[in-house]
Structure formats: structure tokens, C-alpha cells
View 1 (cartoon, helix red, strand yellow):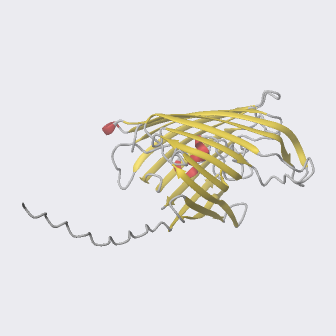
View 2 (cartoon, rainbow, N blue to C red):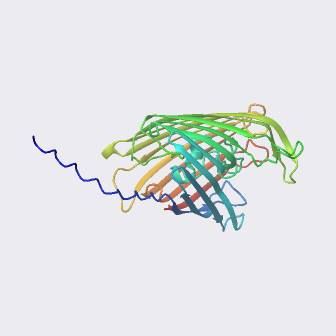
View 3 (spheres, one colour):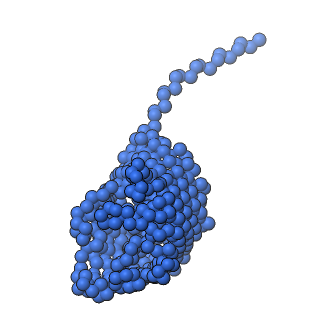
Length: 365
């Protein structure tokens, strides 16, 4: 009878797994400046005066406390413009990131509206933001009037690594809800859906160009509602008070044609059902081309954009045409832009058509 084999020695106590370090801090900064050439006394004339109509720096901070808990705080300091020196809070919000498909962010953050707002001026090819009419009003989704941000909470999710995204926001929660009417405002409800047929767009934010890094065909749609939305005059008194319904839709198509360069097409349409907005309809379309090879330290990107807004009740129509030539040195992070703009705003009471040139410089990291 063979003796039984000795049992294997007991394994040594495993060393306790080191707890993963999750606390992180990320910093960044962005800088934009634009010199404007336009006659201040006769806005139809390009030359005559020059001044910086954009000059600002954005310090950016974000961090994670745990894998699921994070925060962001971004600021803007501007100076040298007609408004003088000004420091503003852009973003100040906390993040609960339970899964790619389910997040809750709350504080001061981007209003979930259109692609342009998720891109901002930093991640789009035109130099000026759509809906900004020189010599006229800003026409855009509710909750984007203050640098695209408002105070509230957003539930959002990313399905299929950026193939489909949804956003549900309750915004304008700093609208003095405890004050008596007409000084108080109800919350703004804003929802958006986005789907990419080609390519993927993961994460909360978005872009209006990928500079050829991927082919993309994506659509998005949003709806907003606010009860008793109020416009205040210069003295802080209610001027217009009305329920607001806003609907918009957008499309982005970009194709890298290899040695033939990169083509980009974008369009968006907005409908406003309220007396508290200056226009009832607004749309823009653009097309751009990015050269395939470097010319010096960058690539050239010519672009054209047309936008128009209409008021059904007054039959007023305003429009704007932009031609931009950008020198893209590092995608979103370093570029120069030379832009010509013609704005037809004479249909507005007292409006004067505008012609101007902007020379812009953008860097960020």
C-alpha cells in the first residue's frame, strides 16, 4: 500500500490589494483673441477702426474623488473689449457617473440643447458662434444666452460608446422661484437625443468637426419648454412674459477623403413658439474643406456659412454670410482664422447692415 502523498503546503497569506488611487486633478487653459476691422460710425465699411471684440482666457479645473464622483470648475477672464475687464464663472458642477449609460450632473453647466452648444466656439470650424448676428440679436435655444450655461441638473447617458446619447435637463433653477410674479420664473425643461449613423461621439460634450480623424454622420434633436419665461428690461422690470416652446434639429456629416482632403457639412434649424423671443425661425448651413497635407506647420480650411432668422408676425428677416479661412496648426488646440462677415439686419427697426473682418487666434491645452 503506497503512502498517501503529503498535502501541498498552505499558500502564504496574499498581500492585501492596494486600493486604487482615484483622486485626480486635471488642469487646462484656453485663450482666444480676435481683432475686428470695422468703421464704428459706418458699420457697412470694413476699415476705419479696429478693436478686440474677443480677448479672454479660460482656466479649467476638473477632478475625480472616486470612480463615480467628480467635479468641474471653469472660469473666464476677459479684457480689452468694449465691456472692459470681467471675470465670470463658466462651469461649476458635481458629477455622479454611475455608468456610461447613466450620469447625473448638477450645478452650473451647459444647457442640453443643440450641437453648437455642446461644441462651443472651441470645437467648431467657424470663428463666430452660430446665431450671433452682428448688429442684431442673438438667436438660439433657451438657456444658452449666458455663455451656453445655466443652473440646474442634467441626467444623461451614452449608449454604444457614443453611438446614441440622451440628455434630460431641468435648468434655470436660479430664476428666483420664490419671488412673486412676474419676477419669478419656472424651471426650463430641456431634452436632447443624438444618434451617429457613422462614427461615434462618446462623452457629455461634442464637436462640430473632427478635422478628419473620423468619418461622421450624426443627427440630433431637442425640445425645450418653460412656463412664464420672462424678458427683463434694462431697469430689471419684466418686459415680455410668455410660455416658451423651442424645437431644434441638426445634422453633421464629415468625410476624410484621404489624399483629397476632408469635407464637412453642417446644418441646423430652430423653431420658437413664444412672444418672448425676437424670431420664430432660425437656421444655418455651412460647408468647409480641410487640405490633406501640411502647408508649413498647419493645414488650410476654407469655410462658408449662411444663417437666417424670421419673425412670422412682423415679416422681419435677418441674415448673415460668413467666409472664413483658418490655418489649423493642431486641430482644436492651435489655429488662426481670417473671417469676413456680411450681416443683413436692416429689416430690424433701426438696424444697420454690417460688414467686418475678424482676425482670430485660438490656443488651448
